[in-house]
Amino acid sequence: MGTIQIDGSTPKLTIGNATAEDALILFDGNAQDFHIGLDDTADDLVIGVGSALGTTTALAIDENAGSTFSGTVTVGVDDTGKDVKFFGASAGSYALWDESANLLDLRGATAAGPGHLKLTTGELTVVDADVLGKIEFQAPLESSGTDAILVGASIYAEADDTFAAGVNNTDLVFALGKSEAAAEKFRFTADNEIGIAGANYGSDGQVLTSGGAGAAVAWEDAAGFDVTSITGATALGATPADTDEFVLSDAGTLKRVDFSHLRENNQPYFAAFASSSQSISNNTTTKLTNLDTEIVDSGGTYNTSTCEWSPGSAGTYLVGAKIMLAHGGTSTTQASVRINLSSSVAIMKDTVNMGTTEGHLHVLGLYYSASSPTFSIYVRHNAGGSENVYGAATSGTIATDGWHESPANFWGFKVS
Image (cartoon, rainbow, N blue to C red; front, side, top):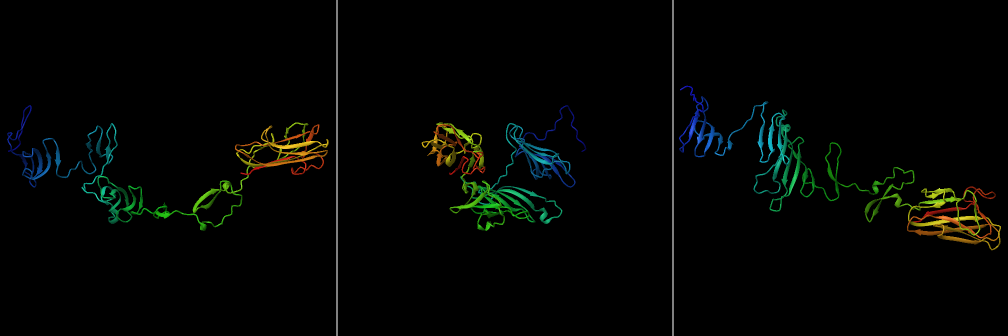
């Protein structure tokens, strides 16, 4: 029989009569037979190899339109591939072999959700060291062979204990090859440990250190500071800055401390003297405003315009002053010098009977202030007329170094 042709507007070929029996179309080849048939017992349409139904089934389509491939499935040919897409249950989700990009794309659902790759084990009882999932990297076609075609790297999850209802302790392991199949290099455990080249987690207080180029990292004791570290090979050559650090032992624990905490501070400090004389009226408490020349001022806290010292912080201060007051009055003349916090608050005072000669007055004392104080010098006398507090510019025996007997001076420093 030659060609069979079925014509008509809706041509139809029916094999079977709705009874329970298999049906078969056989392709009788020269070297290999193939068949398409109905496996009526399984309700499957099958395509297979051979002349008998069900002998070597390649594809079976069941009554629910489900397809089962029993042999290798090849899509496209080498160098001319085809896209293969598998859709998920949520809109927009799929796995796609993208032939043009030569990659596998795992796409999450349109509404929400990332692409998701899950590696699972089929073991029913998971024990310590079982691998739950693994990714390997390899160059199997490398022409050099031997080590070149071994697995070069892998990442895998390994059970760290026997799994149970309340236990799933798992380590993540990174393996790398170096003239060998990939071997473990790093391990991160469920207990936040870091293992180096195996279960080498170091010990308490150790740090992970570099061995330099070409050398492995290792757990090592933290570099301590002891007497062997002190060589004195380099001279400082200057007074240490406040932020320079020293190392000392605090009950056996080495600690750093700034130089500012070790040195005798006594700062700020200042000293000033009068550059010229100042007239003081009779029976008038008068602030000295001629103490306008600084000898020293460590923190720039003395004001030469107002002749006031404002150290800028609470503390205990030692403050002093010395003046020489000219006089040609009576034997009952008195004079006083005082250190004030304001025009009306004197914290220290010295009073002398001048008589008919010049009066030398000195005042010195400690004062504690819970806030930043401001110190100034006030003078008072009852000579009957105006009298001068000598300054360095006064003629006669007055020297210009600020520390001669005659010029008024004012000084102070912080004790603590």
